[in-house]
Image (cartoon, rainbow, N blue to C red; front, side, top):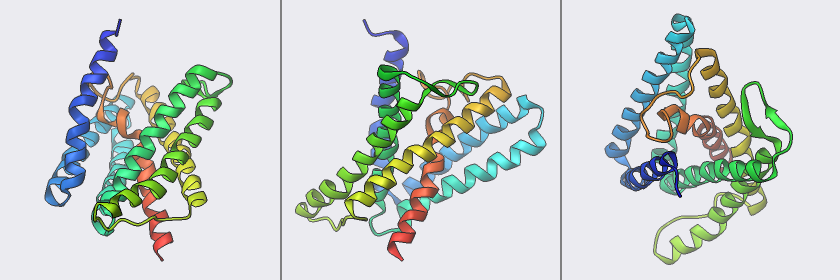
Length: 228
């Protein structure tokens, strides 16, 4: 039997995934408005937690500037590159692969904990599994997706040698885990389990994008370096 919590998570994915894909493809003002709304919700969740810590005056502006930087970089990634759609989808699938591979490898293998006082469920096995998973996804996008896109008449080209793509993907997990652990640490500081209740079965928006937020500027800077 599927638990009610899992049913909620699956339903949220079924609703949000097509919407996210549509927004990524549409680009332009549709994309910017969507990201702007997400930014507003993320700021609201952050300020709610900052208020609970008793340091709203200090943590509020710092967190808002961090989120602004990450969200603006996400917009630049989609809009500034000729292959912005390809890079944005690569980013999303790379982060999702990292999170999924980390979850399943950590659950199946177990072993030593990464940061038991901050996030008791995270293991080094999960971290290694995540680096492999995101590395493989970046290689697949770098090699296979441009091939099929070119066959369909789209101007999409590989962005790096395959071994470089794997390393970039592995660092998705590194930066993703840093972002995830940082948010977990702050939630403990604020005394909350989730950043909000926006997404049934998942918690708040920041619970879902804590990894993505920090990976985005890393990927953006890497692509600028490769393009120079």
